[in-house]
Image (tube, rainbow, N blue to C red; front, side, top):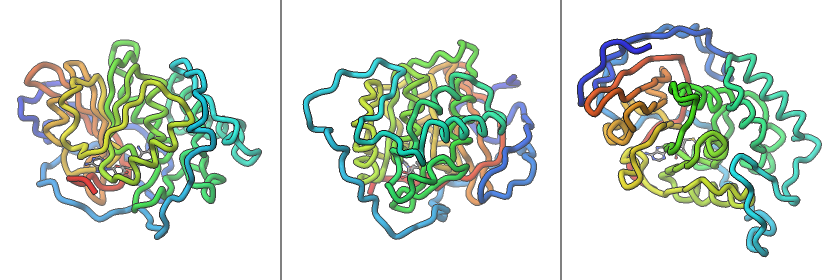
Length: 302
Ligand code: SAH
């Protein structure tokens, strides 16, 4: 699927094969049909935050029982909601199944990804006031001007990362932008080890609080600037950016394993999903896939 590889350092204008697909209906994006475009490199700058600020901090207390006697660890691939957080009828498994059916209609075909989406109780990653909206087709506020990503795009990015010619086997993956921890939980069902970095301390803590009761053994959360990646644990078979920069940080390209796949939104107001594959030590290819809408990738920590 790739053509002539790019030479290091990668220029994202080196799109070697463009793909077209019918874009899924996106809440709030009003996207025209995706037209493959050649990416132009511009300096990385902070861009306007597109997330809605509800001027409200996430105030969910730690899950009941999280300090109680240890519960047996869930086997990898199994996510159990603690009794105190069992879905209410409003956010039942049936509603989650309907969400997954919608994501499949929007074009996601990978059954392992769909199964993972069905297994993760998305409503547990939101503050209670928004839990009833957890399964709608939209990104929703999680505080600090950030959002939990829309179900379709979470599934789509993971599907793209898994299409690696190795039956989707992923040993180590990295997510930039943990937010509330939802996508990390989905990733934990398709990869052996998941590392996720968040630059906003209270969101890093929130993700810990959200994930703790789920007892997922293969997620490691890091507080830091994800633009620097995690060189101490690289290389990664897959990297997903949950925030959009004007270009993909060089450090992340270097931390991709040969044969690895990086999926990232790129752009400011107009953003496109990009797939970057590392084909050799000094060569990467880049494909522009479809329109998307993410909060901005920002440097440093807060
Ligand atoms: N993965 C989340 C989406 C979170 S929104 C989900 O499951 O829904 C994107 C997140 O990226 C925000 O929390 C934002 O703070 C974070 N972010 C932006 N720039 C970052 C950076 N340089 N390093 C780490 N996290 C970053």
